Image (tube, rainbow, N blue to C red; front, side, top):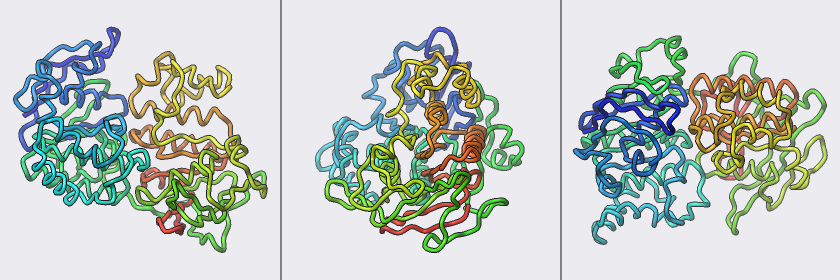
Length: 480
């Protein structure tokens, strides 16, 4: 079904991103591509779906790729799209419409499906994927997880022979991951071929047939499923892989116990400053996003903000950072209520889609926008393993590398309140623990840190406690 024969590829003439790749994936097989960030996983997916060489035309490609009986290099993208569907790491990069209904139908329209078949198929897709809540919505008003679910729905609607998925769970909550897992199992039973590049591995334990482990653009080893998931924790960690077990929030040694927000405030911290959110309400275009949210966080504290996709976590962070105006309520720091402008001066936010906040023409210049000096910039880039890319364009980085760059810029800003919106999206185990360690160091320096995340493994590493938004204007506090 998919054959990659002796492929070497470089995005430029100086360096090979992939080296001597040989891989065959059979009909109905589910194959995992795994490895550290930047190892070449995403590039392999682009070879299979035809983005290389049809969209990325300036690269240097040697070898052949066939998929669904088609020579990928010699076949036009619109022909490949009839048999191969993709879900990208950043779902917004594959949307062509303004509303969800049109986007769900877009692929079917492009392969010439009849109106009657389209109606039947789209009804079935909405029902089978349980995405009624996403219909008749503006894509721009959706959360990252909702966009991810819509992107998978658009691919599923085509009913392709091959699914190419690049970190499809990156923005999904636990319920969304469960739905995706169930649907992947169903399409596998239908005999579809699935190629999936992922860092989050726990949901794949009974789905994949083989796992391909990559390093520096090369295939190091191909594991049968049983052998792969039998790797010891020490082996897994040395390979930079995330946990194989479903993460659960556990009270870790040295973490605070469970607290009740109504009776127990966060500690004031080293310099007496405390972030206090009281009775915060927000409406967008007349629709209530959340209602009467209250919590607090002290200097040196790391608080996780959790909740299902679409409950308003990112909007809440926008209000705290002064990017979104609330309907009512207040945000205070050290007992002083802050205006939107004052919040903006006190907060730095690393967005869920970091492409929105990378502006410069090189990694080094991006960091320099913070006003930090060159020695400090170089130290931070080395900490995040980005120093060798200091002269590279930010848009040429992998998804995980972009994420690390945005976090590095947050570190260099030296602002009191640091807000991270899904900071581990696209990060392998090594990078995740590095980010966790650096965030802890920032907390030790007195920063107030809020982390919006679905990544429970990460929360167990770094958060003191978590606040869970229920979508009904209430919050539930849990230990980490």
